[in-house]
Amino acid sequence: MKKILIVDDDVASCRTLELHFTHQNFKVQSAYDVESGLKTAVAMQPDLIILDIKMPGRSGLEGLPDFRKAHPDCSVIMITAFHDMESTIEAMQSGACEYVHKPLDINEIDEAVTKALNRSLALENDLNIAPNDRTDTSSMVGRSHMMKEVFKTIGLVASKPVTVLITGESGTGKELTARAIHNASDRAEGAFVAINCAALVETLLESDMFGHEKGAFTGAVNRQIGKFELANDGTIFLDELGELSPTIQAKLLRVLQEREFTPVGSTKSRNTDARIIAATNVDLEQNVRKGEFREDLFYRLRVVTIDMPPLRNRAEDIMPLVQTLLGRINKELKRNITRLSQDTMNAFAMYDWPGNVRELNNILTKAVALCPGDTITPDLIPQGISMLSRGQVAPSVTIQSDAANERLLSLEEVEKQHIIHVLQATHGHKGKACEALGVSRPRLRRMMQNYAIHDL
Image (cartoon, rainbow, N blue to C red):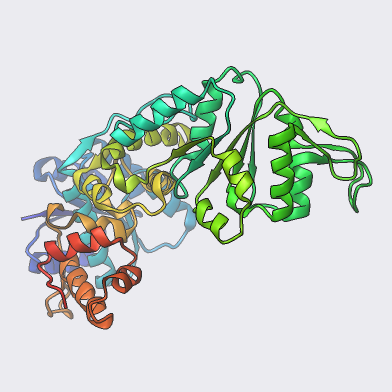
């Protein structure tokens, strides 16, 4: 039986909540000021505290740090009749997990309590992940066989003056790989200059790459040095290479063949010793067959090819990646998040990560920013990911108000029904079902096996 402590000087409000939560099979006690609430909490050891802000003597905001210090694993929901922004901000910064306004809406308070207790359940099986405190943001992480092969290739090609083509999905770390090659080469003291080939229109991209002379076009009020010139004796990284226009492809081929280029508006060529590393997330060979990419340029660029594996194919790298990314995010956001609930880690391990390492970093950044304690729990990550932990998730606490007597479906039941519905709608076509669900074929197969769904 879960225990709830209500601390509120409004006796009628306390009585109403006592009756409601007792009916929901909770053990409930009330206190009418902060001091008596702190004493009651010591004896009761509540799972949840509902704390009013405005009370005689010490306010709930003043007492909140003491409740959090004495009961760090106990969630606190703040309630107030006032709607001022400052109190809300202060309450959340002091460790409250929810904030509900009076007059209390029973459905709103039920939702807040359910969320808080589910978070407490998730904390019971948390993992100390020991965030990595390394400061080098260009270092690569991975202990999988695929990443070890990438590291080996980097070591072999770094010191050799050959062009390298890095392929792989968005977010797999292609620029990190290029930087690692540069840093391990004899050009490490030179500049590493990156160009996003998809970010600029053709005319601006040409100027960005090769520079321009004063008066070369409208707005060219001064001579501009291009990035190939800036990268001389260093490395130039061409990202999203597949987006280059035929004109720029021809100019790039000349750079590779002759080691020279001509700035826009100039008649004089300039030499460059920049090492070229390129990256793409498209199939360049297919683009060559379609006539969309020059064959001669393709073969010039892919002297050595490094294929970056997607995160879904190297699940053993997720934990070290989380440790490294959390260390960096903690430093950036001035936080000290050191733990992940087992539920969260299970969900991470089962997710397909279409956005790869970049998506993992974004999710962790948001979770760290919103985390009220030191542990990332499933409520801090997208629902579509958190629901994947299925039977490995701690049992959820569901509160039903008197007006909702129908049985509520679990996330597993909802997911199973939705998968069946999509398969029926697509007449059992796996490809169309995967597209509608946003999952890969292997994952759909696992989901059907887990839920004992047969081919339709």
